[in-house]
Length: 433
Image 1 (tube, one colour):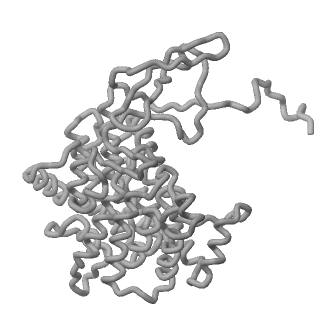
Image 2 (tube, one colour; image 1 turned 180 degrees about the horizontal axis):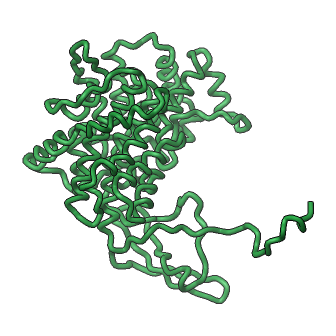
Image 3 (tube, rainbow, N blue to C red; image 1 turned 180 degrees about the vertical axis):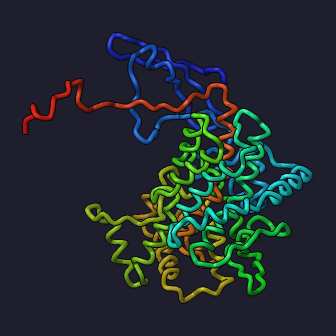
């Protein structure tokens, strides 16, 4: 922890407490309330932790007002333009951009762990064929602890490192296998001569009957999706991973918990929900009807894929994703797809309409990533698994950082209890009503 830069006085009832204030390298000051219950006998009430810093971290910083996202201090737009996903993985895991030799070594270690244990194929076959891919990868990630016993000791730095590399390397294979299983096609094994994104696309779309060539524009777009989703500070799934990790759970269980949390439509399922909304609108001529509904406060309809809880300005990831969306649509020559026609027109309206501009309801990353993945040929059920694939490195980085924090304790939020006070048990024959 840094040294306190000041003190905040909290007065209530007949008590006055002096609470340390810490100044971060970026962002608002933080008031330390860890002694509040001990010295004051009270808790704070903060549903959703909207005003609570749950940890100290050096990994990712978001300035929602400026529309800024930094990985280890590097702006996301620079990384998306100049870097690639595995280099970003190294940055998030270890804190600095790698040297050429370090990057080569890291890429080799990941590449050499992309295959999964052959017995895991039987595990896949235990699921129903129509199971959601998220259900499958949540289960398979948790089951990795049953296959890789040599990397479960969280107190051993070498085992933590092996587990981290394994998860980053194997999650594309697991995700592609979940997709192949859902469409009834044979699994495609990874290839060591392909880059991370190209390998994933091949494992998803290749079939044994013919050769498959990965288009570099599609591979680059996929790599950008991975990079832009790699980490996003203390969101719901990352906080879930940290909370699970605080109990001492093994790394595979912690990441499986994060995947399960990500599944929610308000979190990782947002891009799936955005595309479902576009399909519900159906055609360009129906857009005015839905725009009117979005503006009507009494109507429960909400435009999915617009605005963001953290970003009060344009989502910096969306700018990069829009460029990729334009490139992919141009490459594939998709002009007559009604869903994508609705998306393009809705995007134009949202960027020009005074209502959306004044409320800063700009298209966000979920809006554009859904368009790209749809154009590539992924079904909507695969959108959130691809998000989970991308975010795995962020979860692992946060988990490793948490384990190295000497102030870390098992997570134990408190509550504002409003239930019944103590009452005595009444035998069933004596109860009234």
